[in-house]
Image 1 (cartoon, rainbow, N blue to C red):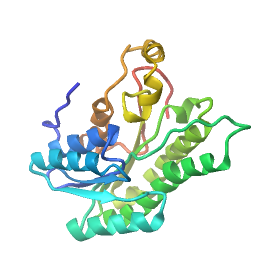
Image 2 (image 1 turned 90 degrees about the horizontal axis):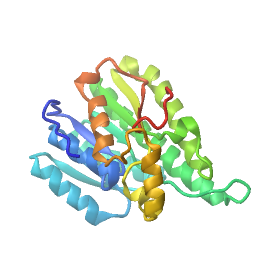
Image 3 (image 1 turned 90 degrees about the vertical axis):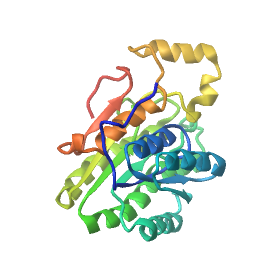
Image 4 (image 1 turned 135 degrees about the vertical axis):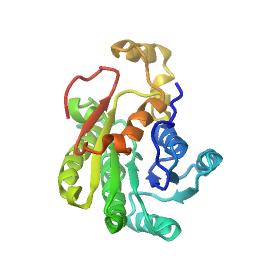
Length: 259
């Protein structure tokens, strides 16, 4: 499904999308550019994919900036944000999208699996947000969207480390919403359910399992990344000017609980 950012105007805004080369991050980078924002596209390893997104962003007449970093490393994150500051001298929008989803059975889970998930999904958000907020405070405005998961509110067997990291993002969102409100920085969270992204490629290679997932969703469809990017665009727009600390579940009715 194709969305259009025509009704939302982000001209003059500068955005950083972590994990911006693939999946939800890619769709968000493109949608924000279509709405008028200049976009810093963060990626870790996949340079060709990031280059492709940059071309699409520039095709809308926007400035696309490639930012390579391992967000679990504080020095790399600070270097990335410094590059953005040197290029634009401002940062208005941060979408903390980068994350990993791995298998881990409690009782057998190696410590390194737990640590890696926390390093990327939680520490990485802390490092990026901690650096980005300094830029936002200079101009006394900002929009932060953390990408969590329905696993944050319902849990997920054999992925407890992932669910724990995403649950932490929900608490972080609510805490920062209050803390940063005096600086005119709004902090919200989008919590997707299943989505047809690279993260799910392996499990969806089993067509029977994919169909089982589809049938479990009340709307009977597995969303494309663009279906998650749309709500993110809304939350960083002036249409959401009075929304902060909100957890927006985007799951087709799969998990009906508030955040």
